[in-house]
Length: 233
Ligand SMILES: [Zn+2]
Image (tube, rainbow, N blue to C red):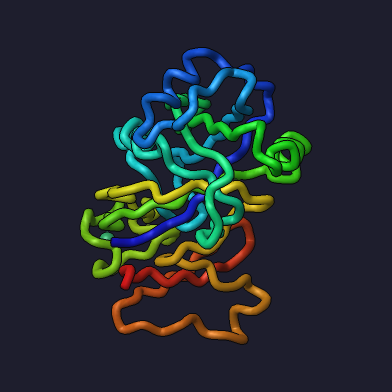
């Protein structure tokens, strides 16, 4: 099993709480213990993940997007992937949306107004300090787009060209969305697939070596990333 974190954008258009939102929230696994009213919660939305090739060379399959949105239901919203703290909000509902060539999952999330930190959270989101959301998920296999084999054992490298086809890999066997986080800036390193450094430091350090890891060198937007792809321990 591999873990990965990817970044999407918070949407700051005003969101009025609908009664259908409350019905969706009540239908979540482990629903609220109290009978929430619209005035009890804030609701926001975010473009959490899409089916374009991401900065690590990975890509969701278009047909997996509805299932991915399904797996987001009830997942906690954390701040900055800090798993030592409890969630500040919870994902529910939302939809799969086509925007241009790209298909996004756009879940909603709610947080209770009565919490002592909720006004702070709302202000940070609405003022654009927290601008991005990041999804963390577990999947089984990075499938090479060139040969269809497991990327960890095939000869191809994401971002390189083979007969005019640029290699990427598919997130296959998605098992679980562990959480989504509010982040002020994306590209937080994933547990299993880490961005280690930019070009200016690339020669000074070497990525951690691991017998089972495949180290990838990715070039994106003029920056070089070294990424180590290895199974979770
Ligand atoms: Zn391959």
